[in-house]
Structures are given as structure tokens and as C-alpha cells.
Length: 331
Image (tube, rainbow, N blue to C red; front, side, top):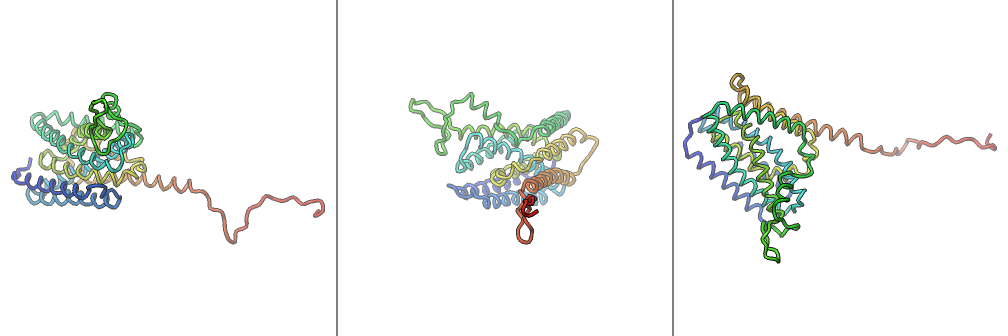
């Protein structure tokens, strides 16, 4: 644990809340739904997360800054799995694009609360019981095997949403951006928009069981863990808008995610005997995700070349014809 002044929490929340306020102002109505805006806001959130690391380095030292960077990259990599889930939930429920921003914002805001709970409870457990590290490591290795076998991009329906839809009173149609409506009979029911939000929140809780222990594999400092996690997930809305159209093309990405989870799990299990520096962890994570993306794009280009129909010859090339047999007169 790195000793740190309490005022750094104040600075952290001031930066986060200010950026959230600017984000909300910029996305009023239907503004900011274009791909260009998604790219811009992705750059804003990534830059904010990396620039905040300069403050961590200045106040807590170089070791804490390296741990922050490694935890940030782990969470940012694993948040790609969240993008798959967002896509499946929104497509399955038919959530219109104009309403997706509100659902994503509230879902990510709820994730900040749940991540804080997981991180502080996990840190307390690790500090008290050393065997918890092996439990975390085992969870990560089991999850890595599951992700390796099941490509989340191929899921047609989110199981959490399906389970909720069969147990809650839900309207068939959307009612603008409302979460609740009252029927003519006077009964109050929820809309598919609230169902989508509940699905996002519950799915993120399940993801936190994986991603938070993965971050613990590089640091146990609660401030470093939470601040890096917060900046990584705050950019999820822009990341979703940026990758929603292309996520299906990254067919091998789940192999990279499985590799990241397995690496973090092995670090937790073998941490007592094998030490991997934070910067080396960053390099390994970047190599795993980069290799998966490169393989996906290469396979996509190869398929595009083989499926392209041959262009008919023009100009000085003679047209191929069937051989003509001579008639009796010509003979």
C-alpha cells in the first residue's frame, strides 16, 4: 500500500465529476451520436486517464504510476467484453440509438458504485487472508477458459435480460425515454429501456468478479485500483459507439481477452514465487490484445480478397469463346 494524502481523492472526484458534467452537456438531445464524436470522446477519456497518472506519479511515486498504468490497461482491455454485452442487449431489445446514451450513462455510473464496493472489500480480504489471492486467481483462470471456448460476439441473447424479462412486468413497446409507464388499467409496469439498464448493471457486476481480481494482480492499493478502474470504465459509452459497428469483425478478440484473464490469474496464483513488473504486464497485455486484433483484421482482409468476384477483361484482351466447328461448305 502506498501512503497518500486524502486530498488526492478530492482531486480525483473533482476531475471525474467535471468530465461527467461536460459529457452530459455535450450529449443533450441527439448530439454526439456520430462516429466522429465517439472518436473524440474516446480520446478525451483515454487522455484524462493517462494524464491523471501523471498526478499519481508526482504524489505517490513511479511504482504507483506503473501499477496504475497496468491496472488501467487490464480494465480497458477487459471492458471490450462489456461492449459485446451492450451490443447484444441493445440489439435484442431493439433499443433506439437516441435512448442508448441515457442507458449507457446510468449503467456506467452504477458501475462506479459497484466497482468501489468490490475493490474495497477485495482489498480488505486480501490484507486479512492471504489465501484469497488463490481464490481470485482460480476465478480468473476458470473465466479465461470459459471466454476461450465461448465467443461473446456470437451470443444472440443476453441470459440476464432473458431471465428478467420472464419475471418482470415489461411493456412490449418503448415510451420515449421513460423507464416506467402506467397502463390504462392503472397498473404500473417497466419499459424495455429499464430492462436494458438492469441488464447492463447486473452484467457489469458479473464482469467485476473477473476484472477487479485481474487488477489486483498488479496492485493492492485501493486508490490506484479504483482511480484506474474508474477512468477505464467512464470511457465505455464512447468506446461502444466507436466499436459497435466493427465489433463483429474482431472474431479472434475473445482469444486475446482469455489470454489477459489467464495471465492475471497466473500472476495471482504464482505471485509468491514469480514477480512480473507492472510495465512488463502492460507490454504482455498490449501484445495479447494487439495480436488478437491483428489476426482478426488479417482474416477479414483475406476473406474479402477471396470473395471478390473476378473483373471481366477489357481492352486488348480477347474474349474467350467456345470453339466453333467448321460447316460442310467451309470444309
